[in-house]
Amino acid sequence: MSETRQTRPDADEHDRPPILELDGVTRSFGPETAVDSLSFDVRDGELLTLLGPSGCGKSTTLRLIAGLERPDDGRVRVRGDVVADDGTFVRPENRDIGLLFQDFALFPHLSVGENVAYGIANRPDEAVERRVSDLLDLVGLADYADAAPDTLSGGQKQRVALARSLAPEPDVILLDEPFSNLDVSLRREMREEVRRILKETGVTAISVTHDQEEALSISDRVAVMNDGHLEQVGRPETVFEQPTSRFVAEFIGEAGFVSGRFADGRVETPVGDVPADAIAGLDAEYEGADIDVLVRPDDLRAVPTDDGNGRVVHRQYTGPAFVYRVELDTGGLVYCEHNHADQLSLDRRVRVDLDIDHRLAWFPTEE
Image (cartoon, rainbow, N blue to C red; front, side, top):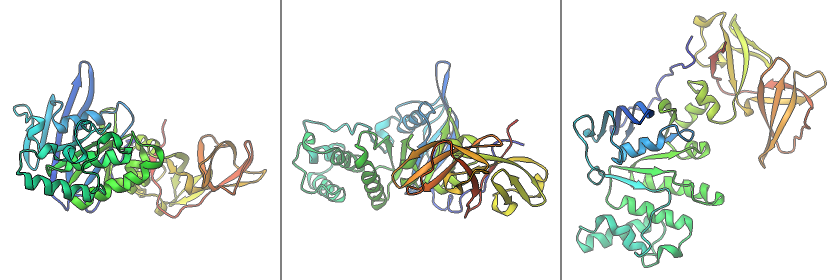
């Protein structure tokens, strides 16, 4: 059995027409292949996030879409028009694609309003003034048109950069690690604000990040990348709850695995029996198979008792909760999330029990 399993596409994935399409796109730098036969599309008005560890190829993918890199193989289309393939390469300025840089890249010698107007300077003055006014109002900076960029906070600079990217009304806007230069306290606020602005304008957007919380919180769909390949694309909740590979399961959130054998309609595990109908995609075809069931911290409870089935080996305080890492007597590590008032000491014997209200994912046991 393969480690990666296929799941049914999200129901509304193909409801809207594609604005951007990548088909078998490959890009190498010397002996290193940064992007390998990458294929996906982004739908009209959708916010899709490329998520993965450093070096997985997500930033190269963004550069290939923007036209800052040329693919060695494959095809890139925008609104059905080929912008890159073996015989075609449309320059970045002619792709109708906006780019929000990681460092915002505002022009320090121009005012806020002049920064926003930079990409539409060829329009009539009245049209430029109206567009700039509308965008500054949209991003909540209507009173800052004459301000200098160096007088703004980080969050305000990001809003100006976003308004400037939106000014030419691009088909697609690309956001390269858009929140990495903001203070932690600002990131959540700005994630919500940027999503609101993108949805109000109806623009199609692709974001790149290695921050799982960011990707899950702002995206319509998440595309998880690893070593230049696409591991899984789907709604945030689908990718988190039903990962199709161990890499996705372990990269997004804290993942524990409990082993068991599927027989007679249930899987017997060290933390309790799981009925087959509580495990997605497990049917009679796999009768007698040894499997690993994915359990997240909120799927388990650790009850202190001397005759338990595991031992607390680590704990992490997150504010609202403690996350305990428990070493099971049968081998393997799992995570248990408890309210901050439930404090378990290190080396404490515990009984780990299942506490689930959704279907679990599974993978064939690794040999």
